[in-house]
Image 1 (cartoon, rainbow, N blue to C red):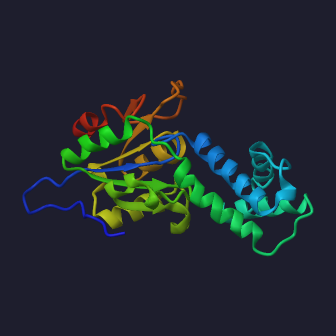
Image 2: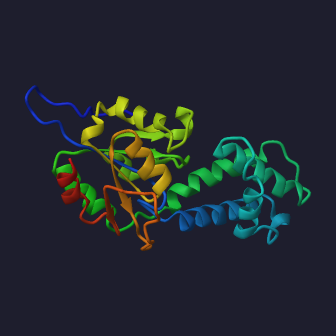
Length: 239
């Protein structure tokens, strides 16, 4: 994806970079995931009518949960969970788990629903001249969403080789954008991967606390918001 660089003419203050986490920051994770899995089951039953009624979203979640701690990418683990679910139902078919993963990946795009505060606040950030981007530990194909047109860069940490809160995803985003850590605000819901990770790289970090959690000891986000509303004004103060 071509990216705009957060650079400036000599003597001018460069624009700030605002990077976003995805799941639970821009949309709710479980409704998106459940919708994609539900549609995957429907498509599977069309292909294999004998499986009708044998799989549910909760069952597929349980197969995936059983692989926690197993090495592999998110995609590989999801495919293995599908394979095991099929084998337990007497279905061994080359390529079928891969087909299910492809369906699931595609259906996630149609199942996602942005929080209503996302697009209006991104409008304000863009109007202020800020560079926007995304840094995610997940494998959601955000490039296929309309909101991706706003992003100068999209970093999938898994492809970089280390997940947030490691420095690599943040530093790679800085390389792509040309942004400076002192004029960078990362926005996310996770205190470890987003807040602590960004701050360790010298960036400001805004905690999006949509469910009203109490801030645990040991964390000090640069700011906290219950939604993205007000983020543009906050960024102006932080940088």
